[in-house]
Length: 611
Image (cartoon, rainbow, N blue to C red; front, side):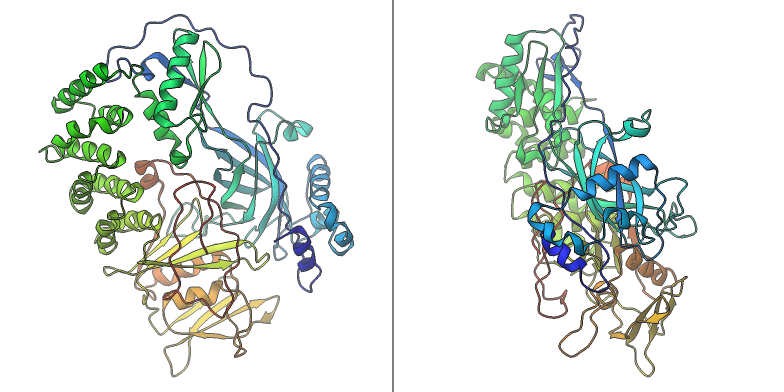
């Protein structure tokens, strides 16, 4: 939606919020001149590990690889009287100036029809907040990342639920800065979008310790520049730096260059597009890439690695990365391990083969995903999700019905990347700004125990495993603040849903007693169908999750509700966030989860999901 379109919506009755996308500007991550190049003491290359001897990693150190926190200050709008006008003078003046600049020249005739920045800040329906986030190391330009949003300390804001963060700028987080210093420095990222308030607090079974003054914009941050990584040579040599540059670019691409030798002391690594979602893997592969690429050396090293892999105490992770760096020429050697009796070696050999495009590795990885140790199954599922073979889905789909919850969720996440028809998706738009995504409902066709999975990172997604997961009558649910009521219709199993806002009751919505239909009634926009029937209440993601959690807790919904857990993410490795979809759901009545096409998770950062 253009700024002018938003302004026209602002002039409509009942609409009190302005959301204009911030203009994108080119900002160099290293805008300030870099400090003088360090002069490390000459050191011998590391040769204690035969796997890495002769590799780039044995002759370099990684610099600028720490996670750099970013901070910004912005305005959350669309609050229902739970905001405040409290704001330090320095931040207030900054926001007034910044928000005033968001209207493009062609929109200026409409300016008199929108609230001024001062009026927005002073409204009880808005709150000034602090925003924090981290751009992943090695991230490419426009990489998405999660934002944490919190009401400023000492303000009278009581809740951020249901709000939208207006476009904001983010800079390096200098903890020692105060006053104007908090707003100084190059703008390295921008952010904005609907807030998710964790309704569970620290414990998944309780809501008493949840903090409504803190929320998250899942995938709401966007890096304005790539965040490259430096490789510092242990023994500075421009000739060696150029040799490493050529070797890396030969393996990972010349356009754009994956590596640039900037001086005799260091190279800059640029994550290639095909590894945009996994910059850590790119750095690992570079570290295990051998500088010498002559056929005689490669053949000798391949034989040496095969011997090391079969020996006791082998570091199979290092060996597999070295194999992968050497490319497809190693496939004949690693194929001998596809049937090896050691499961770990079989996994790493198959992983290498799969990543290098060896079709013979697929049944090996499929077997590991279907059985074996729990952690290895999870890793095998991730590899099947990432591989290019269309046959991988045949192995993943049956795992949606597995008894183990983590296995089912891992298979679901893997199949999202493959646009699998077993997952059918519906996008719900935000009530305050309908160009913004509220969340995505994924209906997973499968057997097995009933399950609901809640995403808390990357992109807001609610997965219901089973299209006909029931809501068992009799039903009665009332929100703690009496703002929502769900109960069974008299002489029927159907559910009746209605909301109360500022003492006024909404129209009743009657839906069949199924979770998918209940979620649609809660989240769909409050528009009238041709029959005059109200489609939904327009509740935000966090409220829908809160309702489902309460109904699962008392077994009204006979399903396990599982929150996305950090340990699983740590086990499977970091994953970058795809572009948030901002297109409208096609018109034509209430979306039917059983008939809509699947929505897939894109393989590369910066790509949009299909609606």
